[in-house]
Length: 368
Image (cartoon, rainbow, N blue to C red; front, side, top):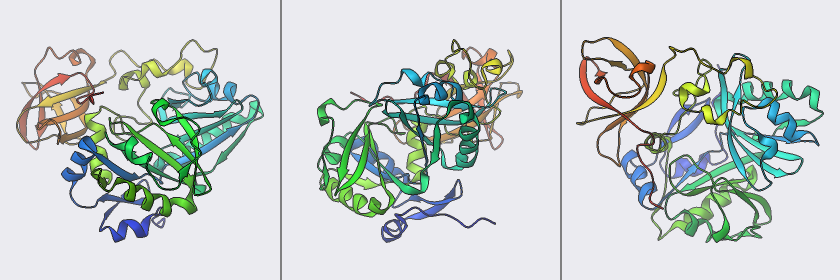
């Protein structure tokens, strides 16, 4: 049995009374106070998340852009320095190995952030695919910590953190899916305007040794702004409301991008990339939809989606009673003929059929 891993912020989480859960082999805070309180804080003010379990890889070399065009589904060679892009790492058969965010740090240098549970698979794929391109791929996951500040007050909080200096892009000019260089008490800091909650926010990448000091400084800056530490439970309901897929739920090794509504991420007119010849799903392959229901009983991952006569036509991948909307929501894979929502569908919640309507994703969209 592999020993559980903890982030550099373990002692801070324990001092705050966090409950822990296993996530991708890491012991991560699932909540500090209550799931609902933490969820609402992010929607109304701000939450701070430890996401240091995520994996980071750097790619260096004159052909780095060309290499990533081949290794990933998107066209990363066209990504400007200072910007970030969501992409997919596909297998030869078109299945999804992982979803990643790519940052162009310089003309010949990129940063890739992947999911913790897929670190080994991503590392192996990136390394194998690099051979023809004379680039250097390095797994730097253990060198860094990653802290996310999410919510309407995120910019006000992060811009007030004591110790953040030398910010390369003025706060008012920082855009979504872009990043800025900075320092935190003399250490390098990457300020990325990205997140996984559907709110405005930042993800702060620092050397692991600086994580505790940055966490403390963020909490201090958030005092008076409604900032709370938030765990994985709130993170899950937030991303579900925002219609964001989670690997292992909406995305799997057997899922093709178009099934998950991610066909736009795949640049099929590239000359070549891994998975290109197999990226089109079968005509009868189930597709991802949003489902909304009434009442208080929510479907959970693995629960069937059925028709009025009880025929199983799909399966829920993520579901919850939406804290923001006040009714049950879910994402599910259903037979493609039912994705338009013209046929009444039901969530089979432990033998009880709950009427559900196909709903366009996301369920929640922040006010700008």
